[in-house]
Length: 622
Image 1 (tube, one colour):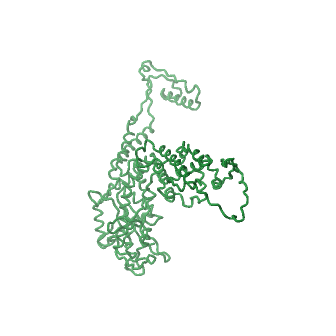
Image 2: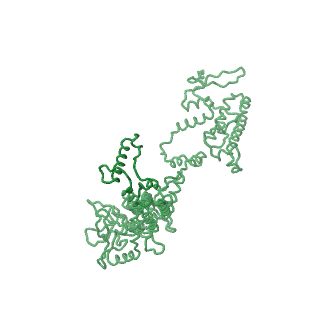
Image 3: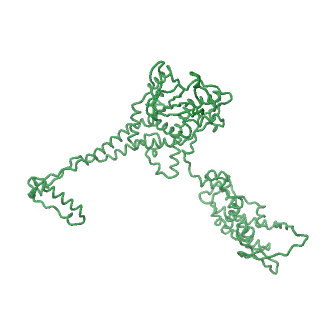
């Protein structure tokens, strides 16, 4: 909606705030950003004429229209700039440094209207960028619009090339006129409108505009002239196919023709037509026989062919290619962008091109545009919405360039950091663009984690709880008790059911037996086997590339420092737990089950990148 408007009920009333934008403490705005009547127009126009560069600006637009190699990179930059989004930025009044997006509702509301709002902003930004690159300047007009059916309307924003804005009259009759972009007609600028010039100042004379196109104009002339020369030669070669000269002494039957030459030409055309219509026949291979004096035949003078056009200029294509290379080097942008070869880069170098283009070229341009809009419209709008001038100084127009600057693919780095537990699951999902609701629930997470652990230690399926959690119908068959009381390892039987147990005595019904404590000696023995396995894994991770980088890290803790893929866990544990059966026999345990539990625990530590914990080991052994 319009922020500035005149009280249309009373002629000559000052500019005031729309009712919809009212705010406690709001006060009317009585001054425009630039004088639009009286001697102010003359002064501004005199300044403009002193810095006029209209001749080279017109030539720049001409080459923009006729040389595709000149137009294409400028349009590419303009299209990139058009993707920038606008937001209100809050400044530190002490240093002037941006502190982040503004939260003040007035600043946010005003920023949404800049350059015609979200619907028209991209198109106007594109025109601004092209005017900045070709003539080096643009004129921005902000026209307040009257209410429609009692509702305020958004301001009309117009961006024009310098030749489309003119100062007319003098003295009290001085006024501005501009070419309406919809009709092309000259329209007088309303006194309520705001007009400001955005230009790239020339380093020698700040009033004059400068641009990327200006130093490229001589090169564009070379490209144009070489292209015209090539086109002219091609046209001349198509106009005349050449001349065939026939000696008068040539003896050839005239037939119905007046001369021997005409008769020969007719026979040649007839033979040619026959050969074309009946390819593969003898008609195309039999020569035409002609009688001529021997001296003419010997000298080759009986027949001759003359090409009236000059030979095609050799190297003209090379000349034009060199001119195009100079053009690419002249424009204010990376050479591969100017040459149109950025699409040939690989992913990483393509990102570098986009990043350098933004930092060196696009960012300064957006900064200049943002400063001009902030000074000439945004801060006066904030004052009109109730802020003091000092408060308005704490805000400026900022740019969101997320859609412009491509970032490198950090997927591998993020995965490595996530595996080391250095970044959260939420951050990992956000950086990869995965919605939060795509995360598995706790049950699915547990099942998938167990699946990965079991891949490294398949014998863990002998634990009915593990199989049940994975949704498998596999349980342990009834175990037989040996003469010595030892319980050998059970056998996995798909679909089997657990043996029935005698009913508990009435006094113990409903009571669950407490988990049996794991002997401290068994835990110590198991811990030695765990450290041995982690030590082996660390040795395999210590490759030539990273040797010497982790001198202060114990080998059994290296898996917390060095990145690796989870599918390597089996290879990292190869050869471990060789003495697990000795410990199992000492404590009258099934060696296979005991080894499987140890292997599962170490695989769990490697998979989750967690340090060994004695309490956690006891839980696995229990």
